Image (cartoon, rainbow, N blue to C red; front, top):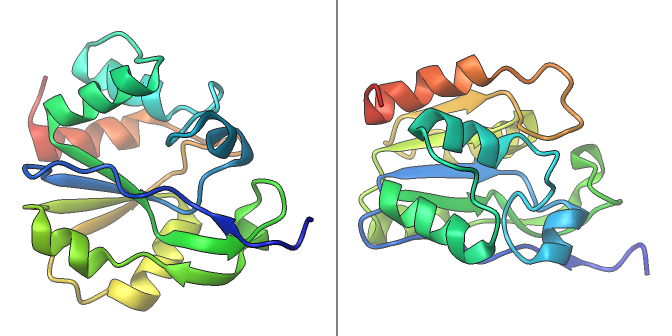
Length: 162
């Protein structure tokens, strides 16, 4: 069972998505809840909500409405892999997301890489994509050094001050 391939999520996108946030691969909790950043201890939703001055969305529908309103697309750089629990370091035998396809159908202006593993795989496959990209500290609860200021600075450069 442990060695079976795990499948990630389809990209969440809209025809007017201008920012793409790429993670590595959904955690066990996210896979169980059925949407991106499903672990309530992950700083992702709180950080975005704080930046935009909103309540933290709790349901999948609220999260999708939040993203749609702000023209944010979400995906993971790995779409299929072998992984132990939620450990990025255990990802192997993986399939890389078709980011070129996504940016061909959405007017993506910037890509944020959520953490080192997402950045490492992205740069290996898409470093010349022609869209600005930036690695930020992971919002994972496993990252004890998370700093929302880094995210706020990058979001401000994309959306302006809110």
